[in-house]
Image (cartoon, rainbow, N blue to C red; front, side):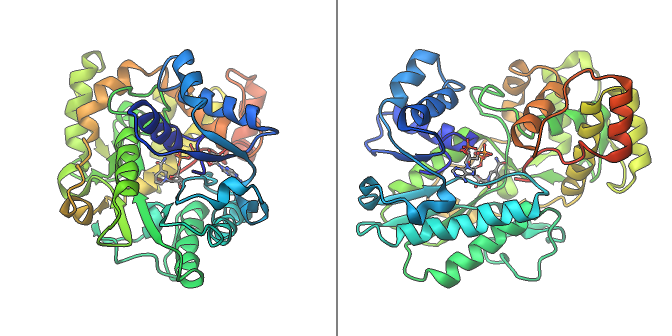
Length: 396
Ligand SMILES: NC(=O)c1ccc[n+]([C@@H]2O[C@H](COP(=O)([O-])OP(=O)(O)OC[C@H]3O[C@@H](n4cnc5c(N)ncnc54)[C@H](OP(=O)(O)O)[C@@H]3O)[C@@H](O)[C@H]2O)c1
């Protein structure tokens, strides 16, 4: 596995190790030595369980230290005996063009080159993203429509994932490649926001602002991290799969409709009052800025950064796109719960929306995250220069 220290990697390891799944995991982790790598895995597992159990589970994995983008230079013989690769690692920041392409495209090809020396390899499960559909998808996207070289992407991240899929297929015809494309991963159905609040802050901010960039009857395709983890493990367990590409998504029947989400917010947070979402154009910065200032204030650099990130997310929300999961369901995989079904758990385990954004920003933006409560001068400078305007992370 690559990406064991990330949100989905942690969820996979936690599910597999705590359920007695028989696989032996070899994790490729960036760390100065194996023990430090193990401690990084334990820290991630600690978001899913208590620290002692996290330590105990982390003792059960093999740790190979290294950067997956240099995987073809890692001679460790434990990699030679790998039978299945689960490739999750990626740079999920949106706008660092050269860096994300190098990591997600070039790095994935380096891993595939290393995998071609694994004599007993039966599967290379590459985790891509459904957002390779770019900025002009039809309302319902199935697995056959993308990737396409002429897709207009909203962010460099999805362009790099799209390019990786195309190059893997073209350059590694003998690799036992299966591609899993999760849609947008938000929270954990049982643990809520504890394992990570990435993108949850976006949904909460849209609700708090009462602003949407699509119809309230529109949909957003959200799935929880634990369901993605279970599905990836189940895909690894299947000796045969009917297809080589699968959406891990809500699809027609389990995607999240904004009006259902509004009712779920009302039920989970009655003090927040009735939810009537107003529609606006994602490009209408003035409306967003005015509403944001009234609701959250624009008195801190982090809030300026959050508003800019949100404006970008509203462009994704405007797509109103659903990713078909017919392939997955036809092969007997369980459908995901929709966000309204586990929203209450997410809210119970959440702090302030701005703090959740800060966690996202701090972990994934290039450079330092702005501190909370800076001077007015810093906030003004941020607003002028856009210095913090390279926020957050993934589009899914
Ligand atoms: N979360 C979503 O909404 C979503 C939706 C669709 C698809 N996906 C895909 O799912 C995968 C996992 O996403 P996630 O949300 O779990 O990501 P994440 O939390 O951002 O974690 C990224 C992981 O990749 C590792 N990584 C990055 N660069 C690396 C490198 N050069 N060498 C070794 N490891 C490296 C990170 O390791 P460090 O800890 O060392 O940085 C971390 O373990 C990604 O491929 C992403 O594109 C995610």
